[in-house]
Image (cartoon, rainbow over all chains, first blue to last red; front, side):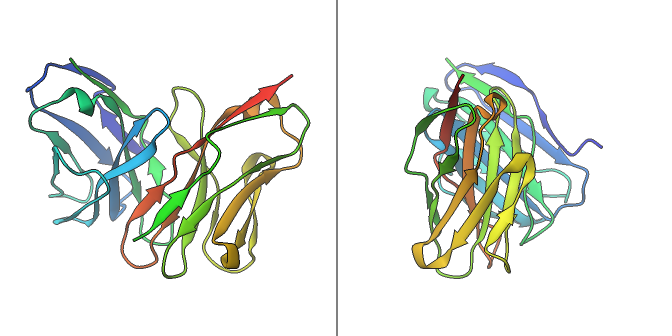
Length: 112
Length: 113
């Protein structure tokens, strides 16, 4: 059972570079989420999706983009990396509402 | 808009003592409520959830939580804390309409021997 898989696990970016954080789930879940976790700030919702082709902004969407072309994949795109985007990023999925979310192991991103 | 507040950033309890972690939420309709635990360097694990029905819910590892609609609270409790309970605990509220799932700031629990 793979569950929610995030790649890469670690990444160092230079300011201004771009990258895509990958998230895939094999549970046929409709809902998917991206969060960032900073010390003392908890998890902040960046974007979420309730199905293929449908995405919506969360609490902190600036500087990020997402797409959801398939049920399985929900990549997060950083176009112009900034030091403020240094964080741990978590992807999660759940079948629908009301159900609990299942989390990936996270991606630790450092922007220097 | 939904929101979650965990008033205590850090709590220290002695091993064997009881524990209560506070969670207050804001949501206009019936909320779906969750508690998750995160050990250092790990992902998040669900402790328990409330959707409807009995307002006292039991979870894993001996944890329970009580939903109090009048106080907009969903506090987590454990009668006797073990050293292995040291971790960060997150409360979350899910919208009953739409898919938004919002987390609180987290409470870090330390356990004294």
